[in-house]
Length: 180
Image (spheres, one colour):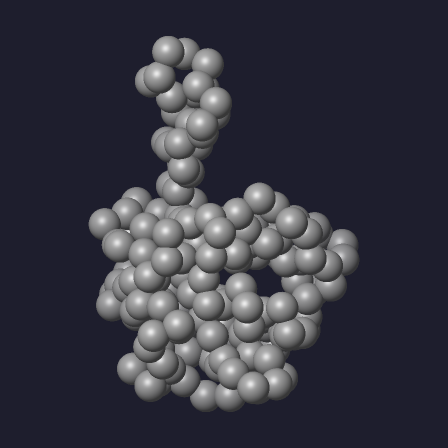
């Protein structure tokens, strides 16, 4: 699974004799979109596949992104003020694989793909729809850190192909396992 696991992990608290809790069964049926998140601090850049993300406020607009505490991006985002959220579509599976299956602890992912510097120097991946968000809050969310982003107005939304979902990337092998 990718750094930020795009699907549920089995709960250690089973209420039904080991076949999975109602939560596990219900969440296992969901097929939400996945995103590529990039960020940069004063000394380095990083990015990962994000499976836990959603709009969380209309007015003011806010977007919630959860970053696995086990991966390289978690360390970089601690010193960052901006995250760029990219929306991979059908046809972007190789790029999604790069950001899910490789770890920034060992590989410079940005040397293997096209990108340009965006807001606050955060990498914007070539050819993807994206928006930038300023981090307005951080919350411990278990094995992930929940970041609430305030969109800055920077971005691009021109593509119309189907977005990649958790089901599309379930065969990936994580650069880091979920958790810390």
